[in-house]
Amino acid sequence: MANTSSRTLRLLSLLQSQRYWPGADLADRLGVSGRTLRRDIERLRELGYPVAASRGVDGGYQLTHGVSLPPLVLDDDEAVALAVGLRSATHSSVSGMAEASVRALTKVVQVMPQRLRRRVEALQAVTVPAAWGEAGTEPVDPLALTTVAQCCRDAERLTFDYVASDGAHSDRHVEPHRLVPVGQRWYLVAYDLGRGDWRTFRLDRLAEAANTGQHFAPRRLPAADAATFVLAGLHGRRDPYRVEVLVAAPAAEVVAHVSRWGTVSAVSPTSCRLEMTADDLSWPAMALGSLGHEFTVQSPPELLQLLSDWSALYSRAVQRTG
Image (cartoon, rainbow, N blue to C red; front, top):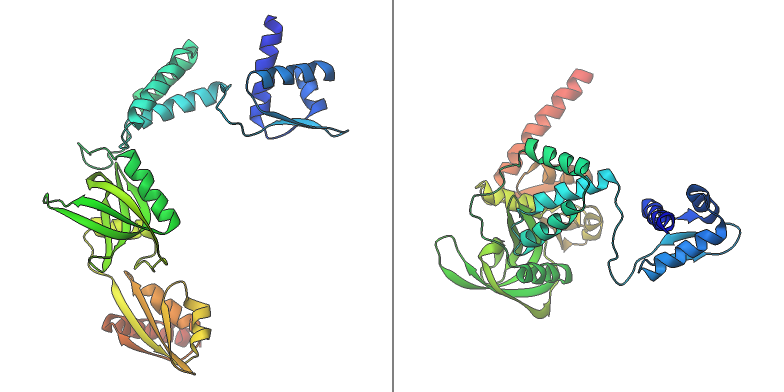
């Protein structure tokens, strides 16, 4: 019986180590016959492990997705990695996650052999966590976190009560874009319908989050991505540049090149207006150069200066080459 139990655990460990096992290879690794292997597979199924079998000469076995989470069999390195990860998660800023991580960590460490427990304790002793965020960060309500995340995913307008840094309360109606974790805080990047502009909200200051059932067409974020937008706000950067350019080309042709970065509107059959928003004027300058058409910059003046500087730089490069 002891040999059978040990073999079953070994079988489970092998099935968890790779996606698919040919039956002959699996039986050979366990040192059993095909008939014994099939009995062991049935024993695993009785324990709740969903093992799928394929028949034929090249038939084999693999673990599939189940409806519940059966016990896992971990090797030494996996057990240590899990324990260290759980210990780090005990500092989570999401409400309830720290407590759940402590409970899970207790269960894992309790059944660890002493040699593995020593490895975990040694790793913890020499690991210095990064000083992310500020001390005393308020936890995030997991229900609010999931509600906001779902609204971001489904492009659904969101309402919530928000507490500003000065303690003032306000009702917000937004089009949520993305969630960004920075240190021990979570931030929501959203278009504020009441303010008519993009805003960043700290989730620990957000309450009564509710989806409205109203879907919206996603707007273009005035930054390379949501993380860049949040970090720019945290670092106190000024407002992004508003770029407006007249391009001597049909609107459809310009849209094919820069639709991801700007808004194009037709002025005539052979010209259009291109509008962009950017924290750094380098990428609008590169986008305009890639069009291969004449254009006139209407704003901002800083873009004209940058193009002038680049023009002089390129001219000198051509002269040196000639």
